[in-house]
Amino acid sequence: MNTKFRQLRLSQLDRTLQDMRASPTRPTSGWISSVREALGITLDQIGKQIGSSRQAVQQLERAEATDRITLGALRRAAEAMGCELVYALVPKSGTFVELAERPVRDRAARDVKSVMHTMMLEDQKPENADQLIEDEAQRRLNRNKTR
Image (cartoon, rainbow, N blue to C red):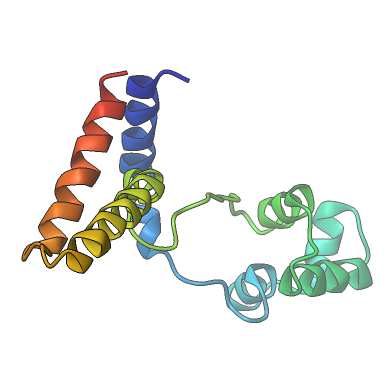
């Protein structure tokens, strides 16, 4: 994929998912159970909506709580409660741009530290190590952006 196009896609993802970063964590019992109970909907009512039994709905709730549910089943349960399933992959920390830049920054830090170690052995260690690492990372990132 073209590097400029890739950068554009990363920026678009960051903007699109900006609001989702602060989204709440999944309840321990799962969303189906939590939403169903909050709305006062019974297992039988959801079962009727999706054409399943009360026991099947209980199995769905357990499957969600243990990460074994399919997206299709989760979507059907959401629709039965008048909800819409929304899911996304978001970086654990930072942005997609930062996530994509991390390997470049890590390699730059490793390479600069290697050179600094050699310089230190020759009693020539530079004072501003962090700035040198940042400068090298930026140089590499800028080089990648112009490709």
